[in-house]
Length: 342
Image (cartoon, rainbow, N blue to C red; front, top):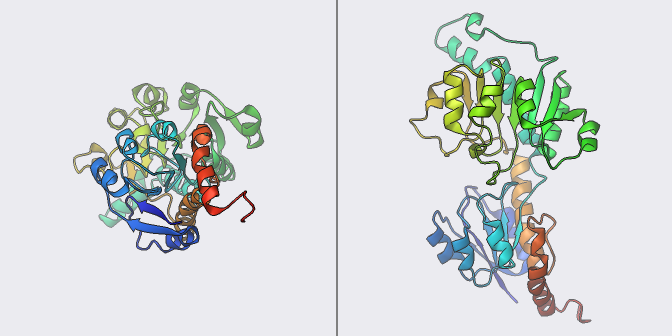
Protein backbone atom coordinates (compact mmCIF):
# COMPACT_ATOMS: atom_id res chain seq x y z
CA UNK A 1 0.00 0.00 0.00
CA UNK A 2 2.59 2.57 1.08
CA UNK A 3 2.04 5.90 2.84
CA UNK A 4 4.09 9.06 3.06
CA UNK A 5 4.68 10.60 6.49
CA UNK A 6 6.50 13.90 6.84
CA UNK A 7 7.99 15.33 10.01
CA UNK A 8 7.77 19.09 9.57
CA UNK A 9 10.56 19.95 12.01
CA UNK A 10 12.41 18.52 14.99
CA UNK A 11 15.20 19.28 17.43
CA UNK A 12 15.99 15.73 18.49
CA UNK A 13 19.35 14.06 17.92
CA UNK A 14 17.67 10.90 16.63
CA UNK A 15 14.31 9.88 15.17
CA UNK A 16 14.87 6.20 15.81
CA UNK A 17 11.76 5.73 18.03
CA UNK A 18 9.53 7.28 15.35
CA UNK A 19 11.11 5.21 12.60
CA UNK A 20 10.66 2.02 14.60
CA UNK A 21 6.93 2.69 15.06
CA UNK A 22 6.28 3.80 11.49
CA UNK A 23 8.01 0.75 10.01
CA UNK A 24 4.97 -1.20 11.16
CA UNK A 25 2.68 0.98 9.02
CA UNK A 26 4.53 0.61 5.68
CA UNK A 27 5.49 4.26 5.25
CA UNK A 28 8.03 6.45 3.55
CA UNK A 29 9.32 8.69 6.33
CA UNK A 30 10.47 12.12 5.14
CA UNK A 31 12.40 14.41 7.46
CA UNK A 32 12.21 18.19 7.04
CA UNK A 33 13.10 21.32 8.98
CA UNK A 34 10.31 23.71 8.02
CA UNK A 35 9.91 27.14 9.59
CA UNK A 36 7.31 28.85 7.36
CA UNK A 37 3.88 28.01 5.98
CA UNK A 38 5.31 27.80 2.47
CA UNK A 39 7.98 25.31 3.54
CA UNK A 40 5.39 23.14 5.28
CA UNK A 41 3.12 23.19 2.23
CA UNK A 42 5.97 22.21 -0.08
CA UNK A 43 7.09 19.35 2.16
CA UNK A 44 3.65 18.05 3.11
CA UNK A 45 1.27 18.72 0.22
CA UNK A 46 1.10 15.02 -0.72
CA UNK A 47 1.71 13.53 2.74
CA UNK A 48 -0.69 11.01 4.24
CA UNK A 49 0.48 11.83 7.76
CA UNK A 50 2.35 14.66 9.46
CA UNK A 51 4.38 14.80 12.65
CA UNK A 52 4.83 18.34 13.94
CA UNK A 53 6.89 20.12 16.55
CA UNK A 54 6.98 23.90 16.08
CA UNK A 55 6.33 24.61 12.37
CA UNK A 56 2.99 26.35 11.67
CA UNK A 57 0.14 24.11 10.54
CA UNK A 58 -2.24 26.96 9.73
CA UNK A 59 -5.51 27.02 7.81
CA UNK A 60 -3.54 27.99 4.70
CA UNK A 61 -1.31 24.95 5.14
CA UNK A 62 -4.22 22.61 5.77
CA UNK A 63 -6.10 23.85 2.69
CA UNK A 64 -3.08 22.81 0.63
CA UNK A 65 -2.84 19.27 1.99
CA UNK A 66 -4.15 16.91 -0.69
CA UNK A 67 -3.85 13.50 1.03
CA UNK A 68 -3.40 14.19 4.73
CA UNK A 69 -5.34 11.98 7.11
CA UNK A 70 -3.59 12.69 10.40
CA UNK A 71 -1.44 15.34 12.08
CA UNK A 72 0.29 14.35 15.31
CA UNK A 73 2.06 16.89 17.48
CA UNK A 74 4.86 16.33 19.96
CA UNK A 75 3.46 17.31 23.35
CA UNK A 76 0.20 18.19 25.06
CA UNK A 77 -0.39 21.59 23.48
CA UNK A 78 -1.60 21.84 19.88
CA UNK A 79 -1.32 25.60 19.43
CA UNK A 80 0.77 25.15 16.26
CA UNK A 81 -2.19 23.51 14.50
CA UNK A 82 -5.44 25.11 13.33
CA UNK A 83 -7.75 22.50 14.86
CA UNK A 84 -10.93 23.91 13.31
CA UNK A 85 -9.43 23.86 9.81
CA UNK A 86 -8.21 20.30 10.29
CA UNK A 87 -11.62 19.16 11.53
CA UNK A 88 -13.40 20.83 8.62
CA UNK A 89 -11.19 18.92 6.20
CA UNK A 90 -11.60 15.64 8.05
CA UNK A 91 -8.00 15.46 9.25
CA UNK A 92 -7.46 13.69 12.55
CA UNK A 93 -5.27 15.58 15.05
CA UNK A 94 -3.39 13.77 17.80
CA UNK A 95 -1.20 14.82 20.69
CA UNK A 96 0.32 13.13 23.75
CA UNK A 97 -1.55 14.11 26.89
CA UNK A 98 -0.03 11.77 29.46
CA UNK A 99 3.72 12.16 29.08
CA UNK A 100 5.99 14.29 31.32
CA UNK A 101 3.45 14.68 34.13
CA UNK A 102 6.16 14.10 36.72
CA UNK A 103 8.73 16.14 34.84
CA UNK A 104 6.59 19.27 34.49
CA UNK A 105 5.07 19.07 37.96
CA UNK A 106 8.56 18.53 39.43
CA UNK A 107 9.91 21.48 37.45
CA UNK A 108 7.05 23.75 38.48
CA UNK A 109 7.62 22.85 42.11
CA UNK A 110 11.37 23.34 41.69
CA UNK A 111 10.72 26.86 40.41
CA UNK A 112 8.35 27.45 43.32
CA UNK A 113 11.01 26.34 45.81
CA UNK A 114 13.72 28.37 44.09
CA UNK A 115 11.52 31.47 44.22
CA UNK A 116 10.41 30.93 47.81
CA UNK A 117 13.89 30.20 49.14
CA UNK A 118 15.66 32.68 46.80
CA UNK A 119 18.03 29.89 45.74
CA UNK A 120 19.17 31.40 42.45
CA UNK A 121 19.50 34.91 43.84
CA UNK A 122 21.57 33.73 46.82
CA UNK A 123 23.75 31.57 44.58
CA UNK A 124 24.51 34.53 42.32
CA UNK A 125 25.36 36.76 45.28
CA UNK A 126 27.75 34.21 46.78
CA UNK A 127 29.52 33.73 43.45
CA UNK A 128 29.82 37.51 43.18
CA UNK A 129 31.62 37.56 46.54
CA UNK A 130 28.72 38.57 48.78
CA UNK A 131 28.26 36.08 51.66
CA UNK A 132 25.12 37.51 53.27
CA UNK A 133 21.77 35.77 53.79
CA UNK A 134 20.07 39.14 54.13
CA UNK A 135 20.06 39.61 50.35
CA UNK A 136 17.24 37.05 50.33
CA UNK A 137 15.07 38.83 52.87
CA UNK A 138 12.11 38.36 53.20
CA UNK A 139 11.47 34.62 53.05
CA UNK A 140 8.41 32.85 54.39
CA UNK A 141 7.70 29.33 55.60
CA UNK A 142 6.07 27.13 52.95
CA UNK A 143 3.79 25.27 55.34
CA UNK A 144 0.43 26.98 55.51
CA UNK A 145 0.92 28.97 52.28
CA UNK A 146 -1.49 28.61 49.34
CA UNK A 147 -0.71 27.49 45.81
CA UNK A 148 -3.16 28.53 43.12
CA UNK A 149 -3.33 26.31 40.03
CA UNK A 150 -4.52 27.92 36.81
CA UNK A 151 -6.09 24.92 35.05
CA UNK A 152 -6.46 21.61 36.85
CA UNK A 153 -5.62 18.86 34.41
CA UNK A 154 -3.29 15.92 34.96
CA UNK A 155 -0.08 17.91 35.49
CA UNK A 156 -1.44 20.43 38.03
CA UNK A 157 -3.28 17.61 39.79
CA UNK A 158 0.07 15.82 40.15
CA UNK A 159 1.65 19.07 41.38
CA UNK A 160 -1.11 19.55 43.96
CA UNK A 161 -0.27 16.24 45.62
CA UNK A 162 3.44 17.12 45.76
CA UNK A 163 2.81 20.60 47.14
CA UNK A 164 0.45 19.28 49.81
CA UNK A 165 3.26 17.03 51.07
CA UNK A 166 5.06 20.26 52.02
CA UNK A 167 2.04 21.53 53.92
CA UNK A 168 0.93 23.86 51.14
CA UNK A 169 -2.81 24.36 50.60
CA UNK A 170 -4.07 24.18 47.01
CA UNK A 171 -6.84 25.99 45.16
CA UNK A 172 -7.56 25.77 41.45
CA UNK A 173 -9.34 27.61 38.67
CA UNK A 174 -10.70 25.42 35.88
CA UNK A 175 -14.25 25.77 34.51
CA UNK A 176 -14.03 22.29 32.99
CA UNK A 177 -13.28 20.39 36.21
CA UNK A 178 -16.01 19.31 38.63
CA UNK A 179 -16.05 19.84 42.38
CA UNK A 180 -15.80 16.12 43.15
CA UNK A 181 -12.55 15.73 41.18
CA UNK A 182 -11.02 18.69 42.98
CA UNK A 183 -12.28 17.60 46.39
CA UNK A 184 -10.75 14.15 45.92
CA UNK A 185 -7.40 15.92 45.56
CA UNK A 186 -7.97 18.16 48.61
CA UNK A 187 -8.19 21.16 46.33
CA UNK A 188 -10.83 23.90 46.36
CA UNK A 189 -12.19 25.21 43.06
CA UNK A 190 -12.43 29.02 42.95
CA UNK A 191 -12.76 31.69 40.28
CA UNK A 192 -9.64 33.29 38.85
CA UNK A 193 -9.96 36.54 40.80
CA UNK A 194 -10.27 34.71 44.11
CA UNK A 195 -7.33 32.48 43.21
CA UNK A 196 -5.21 35.58 42.58
CA UNK A 197 -6.23 37.15 45.88
CA UNK A 198 -5.64 34.07 48.03
CA UNK A 199 -2.52 32.52 46.54
CA UNK A 200 1.07 32.99 47.65
CA UNK A 201 2.19 31.06 44.56
CA UNK A 202 0.35 30.78 41.25
CA UNK A 203 1.33 28.00 38.84
CA UNK A 204 0.03 28.38 35.30
CA UNK A 205 -0.93 25.19 33.42
CA UNK A 206 -3.57 26.42 30.96
CA UNK A 207 -3.29 25.41 27.30
CA UNK A 208 -2.79 28.22 24.80
CA UNK A 209 -6.05 28.98 23.01
CA UNK A 210 -7.60 32.33 22.18
CA UNK A 211 -9.53 32.38 25.46
CA UNK A 212 -6.35 31.90 27.53
CA UNK A 213 -3.98 34.18 25.60
CA UNK A 214 -2.94 36.94 28.01
CA UNK A 215 -5.36 35.70 30.69
CA UNK A 216 -2.83 36.61 33.39
CA UNK A 217 -2.54 40.38 32.90
CA UNK A 218 -2.71 43.71 34.73
CA UNK A 219 -5.99 42.98 36.50
CA UNK A 220 -4.84 39.62 37.82
CA UNK A 221 -1.47 40.96 38.99
CA UNK A 222 -3.19 43.86 40.77
CA UNK A 223 -5.16 41.33 42.85
CA UNK A 224 -2.15 39.28 43.88
CA UNK A 225 -0.31 39.52 47.18
CA UNK A 226 2.88 41.55 47.22
CA UNK A 227 4.77 38.46 48.43
CA UNK A 228 3.29 36.24 45.69
CA UNK A 229 5.24 34.50 42.92
CA UNK A 230 3.92 33.36 39.55
CA UNK A 231 5.23 30.16 37.92
CA UNK A 232 4.67 29.21 34.28
CA UNK A 233 5.50 25.81 32.77
CA UNK A 234 2.62 25.86 30.23
CA UNK A 235 2.78 28.33 27.34
CA UNK A 236 4.39 31.76 27.48
CA UNK A 237 1.56 33.81 25.90
CA UNK A 238 -0.88 32.76 28.64
CA UNK A 239 0.87 35.47 30.66
CA UNK A 240 0.85 39.04 29.33
CA UNK A 241 4.60 39.60 29.60
CA UNK A 242 4.45 43.40 29.48
CA UNK A 243 1.91 43.37 32.30
CA UNK A 244 4.14 40.99 34.27
CA UNK A 245 7.13 43.30 33.85
CA UNK A 246 5.02 46.25 35.03
CA UNK A 247 3.82 44.32 38.07
CA UNK A 248 7.38 43.35 38.99
CA UNK A 249 8.70 46.89 38.50
CA UNK A 250 5.92 48.31 40.69
CA UNK A 251 6.41 45.64 43.35
CA UNK A 252 2.85 44.35 42.96
CA UNK A 253 4.22 40.79 43.16
CA UNK A 254 7.46 39.36 44.51
CA UNK A 255 8.80 37.48 41.49
CA UNK A 256 8.37 34.87 38.81
CA UNK A 257 9.72 31.48 37.73
CA UNK A 258 9.27 31.07 33.98
CA UNK A 259 10.12 28.01 31.93
CA UNK A 260 8.25 29.50 28.96
CA UNK A 261 7.98 33.04 27.59
CA UNK A 262 5.97 34.79 24.89
CA UNK A 263 8.78 34.67 22.35
CA UNK A 264 11.28 31.82 22.47
CA UNK A 265 14.21 32.26 22.72
CA UNK A 266 13.56 35.29 24.91
CA UNK A 267 14.61 38.55 23.19
CA UNK A 268 17.86 40.06 24.44
CA UNK A 269 16.07 43.33 25.27
CA UNK A 270 13.45 41.72 27.52
CA UNK A 271 13.29 43.54 30.88
CA UNK A 272 12.82 40.15 32.58
CA UNK A 273 16.47 39.31 31.87
CA UNK A 274 17.58 42.13 34.15
CA UNK A 275 15.35 41.28 37.11
CA UNK A 276 16.95 39.33 39.97
CA UNK A 277 13.53 38.22 41.19
CA UNK A 278 12.82 36.41 37.92
CA UNK A 279 14.10 32.88 37.23
CA UNK A 280 14.19 31.96 33.53
CA UNK A 281 14.57 28.48 32.03
CA UNK A 282 14.68 27.52 28.30
CA UNK A 283 11.41 25.54 28.01
CA UNK A 284 12.98 22.53 29.69
CA UNK A 285 10.26 21.40 32.12
CA UNK A 286 9.06 18.59 29.86
CA UNK A 287 12.45 16.96 29.53
CA UNK A 288 13.86 13.76 30.92
CA UNK A 289 15.38 10.93 28.92
CA UNK A 290 12.36 8.77 29.74
CA UNK A 291 9.83 11.46 28.84
CA UNK A 292 11.52 12.18 25.51
CA UNK A 293 11.44 8.51 24.51
CA UNK A 294 7.78 8.25 25.51
CA UNK A 295 6.86 11.43 23.64
CA UNK A 296 8.52 10.40 20.40
CA UNK A 297 7.05 6.90 20.45
CA UNK A 298 3.48 7.97 21.24
CA UNK A 299 3.52 10.82 18.70
CA UNK A 300 4.44 8.36 15.96
CA UNK A 301 1.90 5.82 17.24
CA UNK A 302 -0.90 8.35 16.64
CA UNK A 303 0.05 8.44 12.96
CA UNK A 304 0.54 4.69 12.68
CA UNK A 305 -2.85 3.97 14.25
CA UNK A 306 -4.68 6.19 11.75
CA UNK A 307 -2.79 4.74 8.79
CA UNK A 308 -3.80 1.31 10.06
CA UNK A 309 -7.47 2.30 9.93
CA UNK A 310 -7.98 3.17 13.61
CA UNK A 311 -8.56 6.31 15.62
CA UNK A 312 -5.57 7.29 17.75
CA UNK A 313 -5.62 6.90 21.51
CA UNK A 314 -4.83 10.60 21.84
CA UNK A 315 -7.52 12.15 19.61
CA UNK A 316 -7.74 15.93 19.96
CA UNK A 317 -10.64 16.80 17.65
CA UNK A 318 -13.38 14.36 18.55
CA UNK A 319 -15.76 16.15 16.15
CA UNK A 320 -13.68 14.96 13.19
CA UNK A 321 -14.99 11.40 13.34
CA UNK A 322 -17.90 11.87 10.96
CA UNK A 323 -15.68 13.22 8.17
CA UNK A 324 -12.62 11.11 8.98
CA UNK A 325 -14.72 7.95 8.81
CA UNK A 326 -14.28 8.05 5.03
CA UNK A 327 -10.49 7.83 5.40
CA UNK A 328 -10.70 5.07 7.97
CA UNK A 329 -12.99 2.96 5.76
CA UNK A 330 -10.78 3.52 2.71
CA UNK A 331 -7.69 2.39 4.60
CA UNK A 332 -9.44 -0.64 6.01
CA UNK A 333 -10.68 -1.63 2.54
CA UNK A 334 -7.15 -1.37 1.14
CA UNK A 335 -5.84 -3.47 4.01
CA UNK A 336 -8.62 -6.02 3.64
CA UNK A 337 -10.04 -5.37 7.10
CA UNK A 338 -13.68 -6.37 7.51
CA UNK A 339 -13.94 -8.24 4.17
CA UNK A 340 -12.75 -11.63 5.31
CA UNK A 341 -9.21 -11.14 4.02
CA UNK A 342 -7.81 -10.27 7.44
